[in-house]
Length: 149
Image 1: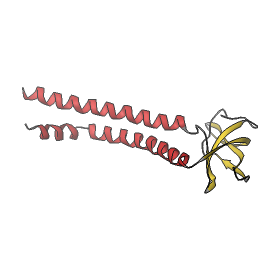
Image 2: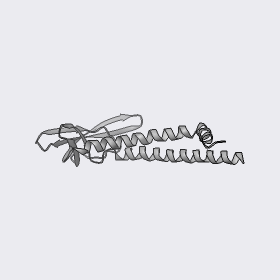
Image 3: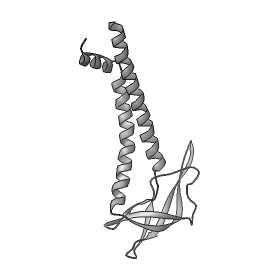
Image 4: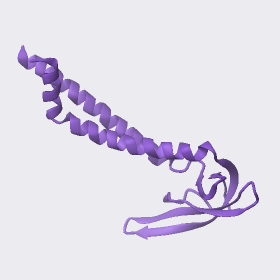
């Protein structure tokens, strides 16, 4: 059996789906990281103050998203509402945080380090699944060589 036929047969037996699933997870984590990197490219870093916490509750409990007030370098007051929630709250009202904002759109801001855990989880799980899929794939190729002997 030719090498390429072995590879195709090994992929048909399942690892392609495992690897694709891993790539999806890894891609989400990498995409979130890239968006964060793009925002910071031309962004200014200023201090902000947590002014309130938006509470969102369901059957599993409550999560809290911070609202932060900051002043741009031009002296304009802005409020940023985070899309990331946590339980317990990651911030306390009155706490000072670092904010990154773009000078052309101060409303589009982010808290320094925000979402890092989520990005790491997606990229880490995706990477682990990809490695598992590649090991599964290599085992299939190895087994196809053993069956031929």
